[in-house]
Every structure is written in structure tokens, then in C-alpha cells.
Image 1 (cartoon, rainbow, N blue to C red):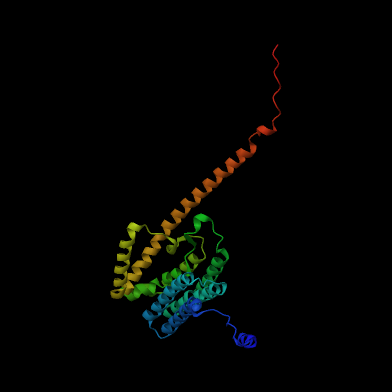
Image 2: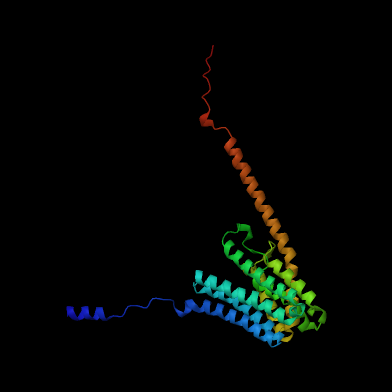
Length: 287
């Protein structure tokens, strides 16, 4: 009996080491986002500008989902973070810039190509800075991004295309207009301008239901008038920039004031005389 048990133990196959399919789902979504962005380049080559913009939008949606899924499945890893950064450069740097180049920037010759490269480089620098600053921001800055995030900058850069598709205003397709706007959005990516991180904002309970209803109307509008609604959303996002700058400055001033008060209090405590170190008072003798 003992020999048979030992044989059974030796015949057991060892467990396979690796990751489950569930842990790999966020990486699958990240790869899908990169494929969607690259597909936008194909649509741009074919002159199908509506599909090209839609492909970049889909990549932005998938970019939001992969992070959410990684946190839900507890599958966050250094490999996934690096893969996400590379996918962002492909979708929101290379693909977005190439769509704009094939749309109208190629008419500007070498200047148009320089603007295309500038946007891609700024996107790469923005993502590299984001990875380097991850977890190193002061407490009051955790609800803000430094500069416009790459997905938002890509959609903002495509705003001239969206306006032409939705309102047929041909002036927005001029290479000078598109090139200037692309340079501005590229500079905003690497700027120090604080922008809202909407995924970290907490909604009060009383506003949850109206927000859900508003999102429903927004999706219905996107189904009926996609380019006009997308243009309106882009303009609203740009209008939040002054608000984010003002609120960030207020929080930083408050943090600096509290830090200064704490420093002054610590200095006063250190300079205060210590009763234990004082010599004992002389004894008074009555006459």
C-alpha cells in the first residue's frame, strides 16, 4: 500500500506556472487599443476621415477600460503599465498625427511633416514624464494631471476634422489652421498646466441620478449627431482648463500657507525656553 501511494504521488503532474486568462484581459484591451489607433491610419490613407476619427475615439475608450479592468481584476503590473504607455504613443501620438498629416498637413510639405513629428515627440515626452512622476505628486495634486493627457490631446487635435465633418466649415481644413492647432495641442501635452482628472472626481449622491440621465442624453446625441456632439464636448473640455488652473492655484496656495504655519510653529517651539534646563531659583530667607 505504501509503495502504491508513493507511486501515485510521483505521477502527479506539477501545476503550470503562469497567469490566468482573467489577469491578461487588461493587456488584451491595451493591444486592441493600439490596433484601433493603427487602423485609423489605414482609414486616413483611404480618405475615410469619419472612420479614422472613430478609430482614435475607440482607442481612447479602450485606454480607459484597460486601467479599470486591471484594478477590478487586481492584474496591475509593471509590464502592463509599460505596454499601456507604448499603446498610447501609437494610438494618440503616431496615429493621430498621421491622420492629420494625410488629411491636410501634407499640403504644407516639409513644414507639415515637422508639425507631425513635433506632435508625436511631445506625446512621447508627456507619457515619459507621467511615468516618472507617478506617485510623486503632492497630496493636493492627485486630482489633476500635469498638462493635457494624451487621449484628450489626441481628440482635441482632431477637433478641426470633427468641425468639418459636423458643420462643413472648410476653413478649418486649411494647413495653417490645422498646423497651428496641432502645435498648440502638442505644447499643452508637455506643459505644466494642471488639468482635471475626471476619473478621480467624486460625485455627491444627490447628483448621481441627474448625471446618469445626462450621460444617457449624451449617448443618444452621439448616435444621432455624432460630430456635432463631439465638437461640443471638446469645446466644453477646453472651457474647463481655466477652472482647473484656478482651483489648482487655490489648493496650492492653501497647502503652502499650512506648510508655512507649521514651519513657524515648529520654529517657535524650538526657540521657546525649556523649563527643565533653567537653573533653580535661589532660596529666599526671611530676615
